[in-house]
Amino acid sequence: MKLFVYVFLFLLPILNYGFKKHELPYSIVISKADLIVDGTISKVSQNEYEFTISEFVKGKSGSKIKVSIWKEWICDPRIKELKAGQRLILFLEKTASGNFAPINDSTGEIYIDNDAFISIFLPKEFSNPTVLKKGISMFVETIKVYGDLNDRFLQNVYFVSNKSIFEIYRMTENNQFFKFLVSNGVSHYIVNAPAIFQLNN
Image (cartoon, rainbow, N blue to C red; front, side):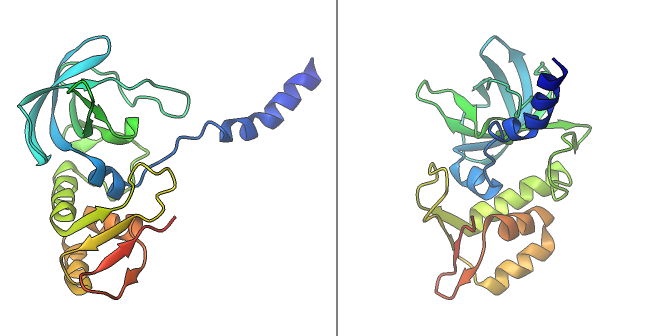
């Protein structure tokens, strides 16, 4: 029996690797999103919650929307229990039923308490909601993404900028999250007009 336990403990890291969550870069999450909003949960039911929007960052909808509750699993647990009054920033795709669903589960659902993010797994560039929302707006206004955003390996995904590389550099000095998006979601600059970036896998 001891041997079985030792073998299991030895193999556990290998077994867990197969259950690792597939992370999407936030540059892709933002580009895929039909709606990016800041607001609070107003009501929770079994499979969805009602969300009251206080600010639209990308896209438009009614001020109250229904958001599907994604299923937790071992490599993607929920940070906090969903309950009325909880503030979230959501990155959402519209579903066939007309509701919305967070993109890449926990990636698309960011919890906020006292105007600060509470997930220890978020990068340090997620300094506060104001900086995050401003960085998203700068990205959406400056960069368009082309290619198959549903391709798991993101092959042939291109970022096209309406500003020069020098203007983008200046913009990165003004917003930490925009700098994070440009540095981590986008790789090398291809000399062309307009500026074109390609995702680095």
